[in-house]
Length: 433
Image 1: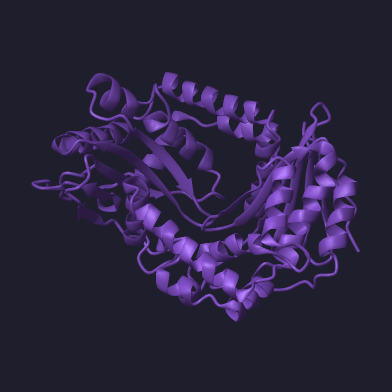
Image 2: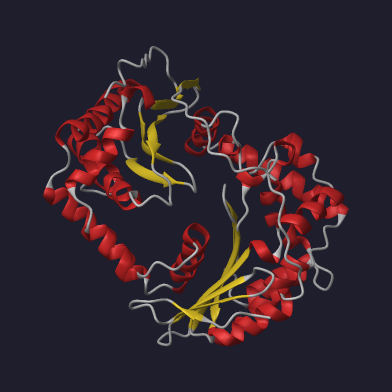
């Protein structure tokens, strides 16, 4: 059985939703003025749901479903993917695993059949798994050779100690080598179940047609209560981490503090705060560090928000002799926001940037499909464009003040740097806000 389609309210009457009895959710956003469609399969499972001994198995499954199914070889999948346009994308994060493809509208059934076959009938051949283990270990080495990515990994491990959010999404060489056919198949059957799946599509498509396709491929799958590792909130930590590597031309650094979660109503203020401090070319950090002093090419700030926690961070890459100045300037801007708040002009500009980004995203079927899935995954409902823009425009300077008062405190500031750090001293006093 399936529930009748539900419609989102407000101006988003083109969005429809159907939920099958086994928990599978189908969401569509019709865009009749285009000839394309983006189809996405999003599982409510990522690396944070894995027990420690299986760290990296979601990412491993994301890779190995491309190695062949009961009716398609790996080469068949590659050829069919190229025939459809060659833009089949797969990804794993801490909280989800996804597969998405953008195609011409009349190719949607073929795209659906391809991805559904990969997800429901992966072959998991032993020799293929061993081959992909080697590929993923090479991927890990590639990250170690990319200082910005490597710093992010070692910083997360220190910032979320002993918690899956601090573990590598790809796992470790030891865990990956343990993913034999039995382990991989058992985890796939238990966790990558229809009850954990959201199928979201946007573009020139018919909702009922997509529901029929989903029911045919996934409707007989039983409703499974996946026994994932508990997703407990991570412990708080404020490490000061210095990793020496004299072979690097630049020092890469991160300054971070706790922030609200993706489900918190203050998330709109959090995004605007990150935008004001380091989100664009007019932001404080860009202007102070890059434009006025020429200390960095890459500099900025971001708000990373998970289901139950968040992190505000500033980042930069600079020459070893300039690290101290970049750190001091970054802390000074955070301190200024705490002491003096943000101006009306800054806040209005950030709002205009954010609203423009939302509205421009409406022209992209991939962005709209991803938004459907994220809203369902995080909030269990669709947040209309009208509602999101109203919430953004409702943020006041007092909201920003309250947010930084709880987040930007000296004892919560974390720091990490990677590069030639000879002579660098970073103390809690130097990070004082």
